[in-house]
Image 1: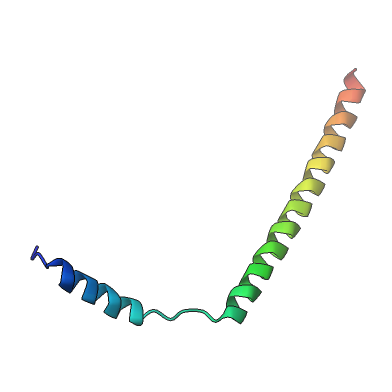
Image 2: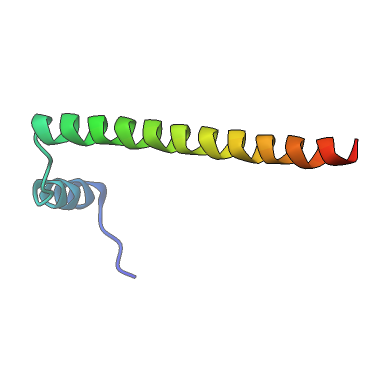
Length: 65
């Protein structure tokens, strides 16, 4: 592999960073809000599943104990 000097490396990095399509502030905020909403919905779902399993196990164990 060919070696490049540090100056060429920095120039190449800057040119590659210039090609990146950066999101707008609005897109970042919207995506962040959506992540929080989805995380909250997932937490509620798993809490409900946990309560259902706990209730089922209590019901089964109460039959034997």
